[in-house]
Amino acid sequence: MKKILMILTSHEGMENTDSKTGVWLGEFTDPYYELLDHGCTITLASPAGGEPPIDPMSKLTENITESNRRFNSDVSLLASFANTKKLADIDHNDFDAVFFPGGHGPLWDLSSNTHCGRIIVEMLQAGKPIAAVCHGPAALIAAEKHKPRLLKDKKVTGFTNTEEALVMRSDNIPFKLETRLKELGADFHSALIPMTAHVEVDGLLITGQNPLSAGPTAKALLEALGVTKTSSSNSAKSL
Image 1 (cartoon, rainbow, N blue to C red):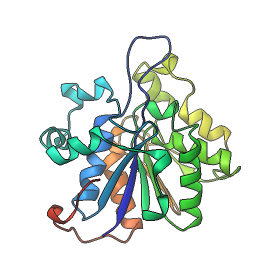
Image 2 (cartoon, rainbow, N blue to C red):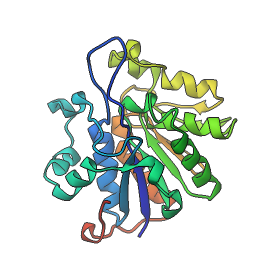
Image 3 (spheres, one colour):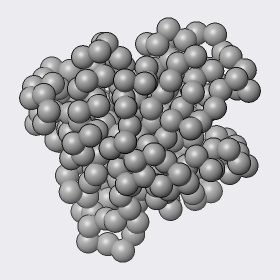
């Protein structure tokens, strides 16, 4: 049974607007259940601990996924989500991999969180995979501060500048993820058509572009972990 650390944002404010952000629900629930249904044990953590904010837009009808509905009736997961562990208290040595869901929140907190950066660098050095989707790859910026040139020539993806313009959030964020990753030397790739699924795998680093990439990113992580046979979800749990 593989043990996965899932790190969620604690940030909900945005710039130049009263609108809120946080975790994009489907980018959490899609990979969560993909991993759970393959027998993984998943621990939820966040910088502040406790219940992470959920981006209100991800609860709109047009953004609801099957996994969102499953989450809403999953008493065990609802309890775990309301009580995520504080990131500073996490011993990353207990885990086989890390997964970063998106939502715009990571642009503020995970991109500069010392514990986040250290966990990524030390997990990679230990030969353990790191997966992130949409704005989740912002966490790699914190890792770059711990190990300069970590992203140099690494194939990555994430929410693109074009997609940022399409959702009309470009003026409400501290930086554009695609631009920043390129500035750090990453070899950034994306789907030809915005808002379609795209995943990049470069060694132990697995990144997904947008909400539709969340499930595929989790599948790529399972492949990296050598998990190919689906296990009963009754044998897995969240912490």
